Length: 107
Figure 1 (cartoon, rainbow, N blue to C red):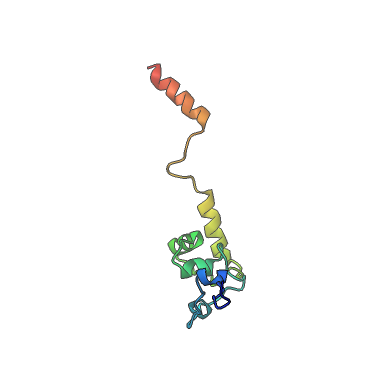
Figure 2 (figure 1 turned 90 degrees about the vertical axis):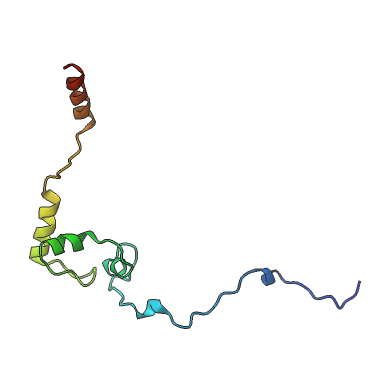
């Protein structure tokens, strides 16, 4: 065996990380909460749906700029009204569905 053989390292087979020249994440406005899955700023920036945005826009109210901004009184009222409204297609409980089925089969 000759000593001239090159030694192979295992790192040769792993892909190398490429450096990012322009970090697009640093240009985004960060929320005071630090960001994350439930952050409304992050969700808006990626085009994800934010429930409170729909409620506020339908009521003609301004949106919150970040997660840490407290709700205005009108915004709280709009959220409470939305959550207490009866749903159009409210599901029946299992027991109610069984009694409905019993009534329809006995006719």
